[in-house]
Amino acid sequence: MYISPNISFAPNPHPPPPNLLTTTMKSLLPLTLLLLGARASCPRSLLKALTAAYVEAQTVGNHSFISTLGRSAPNFLYIENNAVLGDLSHSSLAVPINPDFHRSIHDVEQCASVTEIIAATQEHPYVLHTRIIWQATPDNLAVTGISLIESVVTDEGDWLFNATGTLDLNKGEKWDVIPLAARESREQIQKLGDWYFDRFGDVGRGDVPWHAEPCYRLEGGLPARGTKKGEDCIHVMPGGIKVPYRRYVVDEEMGTVDVFMGFPGLDRTQGQAPMPDSHLFRVEGGKVRYCHTVSACVERGCGIGEIEWPERR
Image 1 (tube, rainbow, N blue to C red):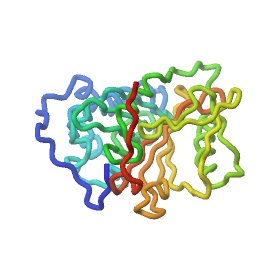
Image 2 (cartoon, one colour):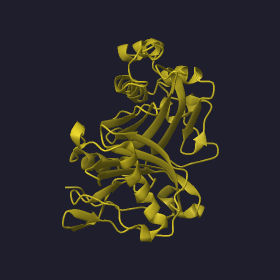
Image 3 (spheres, one colour):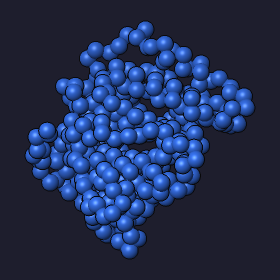
Image 4 (cartoon, rainbow, N blue to C red):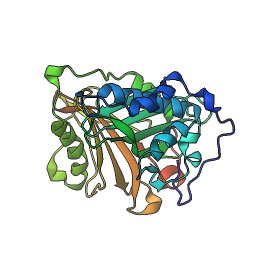
C-alpha cells in the first residue's frame, strides 16, 4: 500500500446497511462498558471478543463499529501506513477485506491486540497487521473504547508482497497456546524482539537464538531462509541500521511479541526515512520459532523493481 501525504481510499461502493452488524458486534458496545468486578483488568476473553468483532468489521468494510468505539475515547487516533486519518470512511476499514486466514494476539497487561489478516484469494489481495489499544477505565476493570488503531496495510508493490506465498507458508506453521509450565515472561519474549532489531545496529550483539525448524523468516511472501547449524538457525543480517520507534504488543500465552516500528532504508527511493513495518515473532523455549513481517513502501517495488516469483508447487 503506497504511502502518500494525502492517502485515501475510494469509498466502499457497496456499504453494508446498518442492520448488517452481527450479533457479536451488536453485543460488544454494552459489553465494553460492562464493569467486570474482581476479574483481570483487561481479560483475555474480552480482548478475544473485541478482535473477533474487528475482523468481522474489516471483512465487510464497515468502519462504523470501530468509529463508535473510537469516538468514546477523547484522544482517539487512527494511523495507517504512517498517515493519520481523521475520516475512517477513507481508510482500509471501509474496504471489504475477506480473510483467508487471520490470527490475533492479546496483551492483557496493556489492554492491546494485534491482528494479522491474509486475504490472498479475493480480487485485490492484502496482508495487514493492525495494532489496537483498547481504552480502560481508571480502575482498569473495564474497556470503554479505543485509544489507538495502527495498521500496516500491504498489497501489490509493497516489500516482497505475495499474499499467496504468505498464506501457503503460514498453513504449515503451528501457533498453539504455550503450556503454562513452559511460558516465558513478557520481558523475556520482548527481549528477543529487541535483540533482533538491536542486531541490525550492532553486529557485535550476536545472532538471535533461532530454532532450526523451519529456519526462515516469512518476509512479505518470501521465505527468507537461514542456515541450519545443529539445533539452531543462523540468519545473515545487514549491519549499521538503527531501527527506531518500536511499539510492542506481548502475549505470553501465545509466546508472541509484535513490534511495530519504522524501518530505515527499506524503500530505496526514500533514503533512510523509516518505513511502516510490523514484525510478529513466535518465541518457544528462549528461541524464535517464526517471524512474520509486513512492510509498506512509498514507491512500487520499494525502489528495487519488480520481483519475479517462482511458481509454487
